[in-house]
Length: 147
Image (cartoon, rainbow, N blue to C red):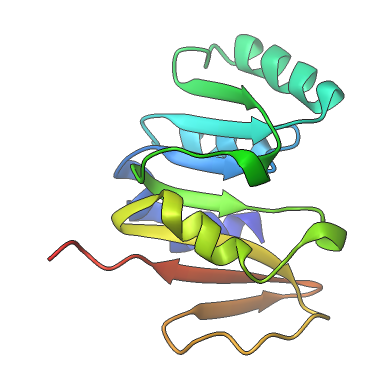
């Protein structure tokens, strides 16, 4: 699914900061950097995952391009400057309002992407694109350009 995600977002990745909410060990943020994202933000609260993120950032010499934010992703707030916001929360804690929360962090023309469990069907609005990959779905919406 990660390969599909980055194929879909190839051009968007290059356009600005990439935000990885519920980053875990940071594999998605590191992948975004390796594919040309100018910067990435990894938001994670778990201490073990944060240590792994920090070590990997140092090992990959990415400390100047990766910002690690030790915070619950649900509390993360920034101005809408990100080209892409990706959220892969624990499925047990996921809620429908999360897509809107991600969209609030995206700049005009940017994309919010939510990984959603396939066994929890939702009637998304028409402007939301959904792609299914086994037990998960990528739910994507592009924020309209500013008028």
